[in-house]
Length: 216
Image (tube, rainbow, N blue to C red; front, top):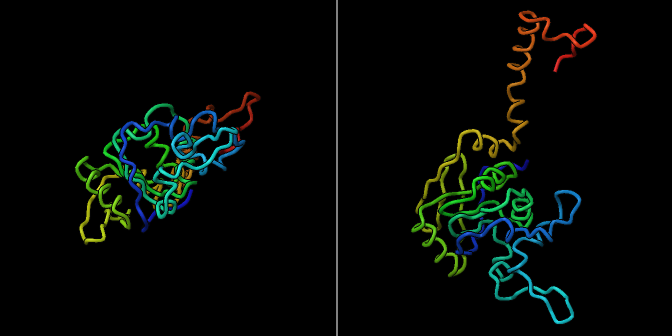
């Protein structure tokens, strides 16, 4: 997983509540055999229009189709972002579009956990702060600095907002680890426990044929 330590870049405003995972990546857009190819499909129902000939063209009125927001790395949005189904492709689409963080008053729980595991930082702030940031972003040129070690969001005016990240997720993002990688940081402890358990309970480590089972 890609590390997240210090990120600096443009914020885009999309202050709408209840943007669910079926909007982020509609089921009809989940066609790739792997994890790639989802960035262009993010928010497809809003990003694209259909012509009379059935072709799909960009909607020029949608914020993420407008310069400079095509290059945004932070999305400022409304409450309950990422609610709905548990599809992980919703986070893949967010990340592959180029977004490293989403700022909202609240998130769908599964989507929030999927963000941490895919290198995207969900930042929860009070609604009044989110609305103020969205206004600044809508005026154009709001470049934010995210300092994950300090759990701090720094504004161009010099103001700093602080946010919370659970300890395990904080470490996963800082070190670029998934859940398995985080567990394997304790490989020596795991191996020591297994060795002690082989001595204390040897019968547990016997295979069906009575031979010692291989070490994990």
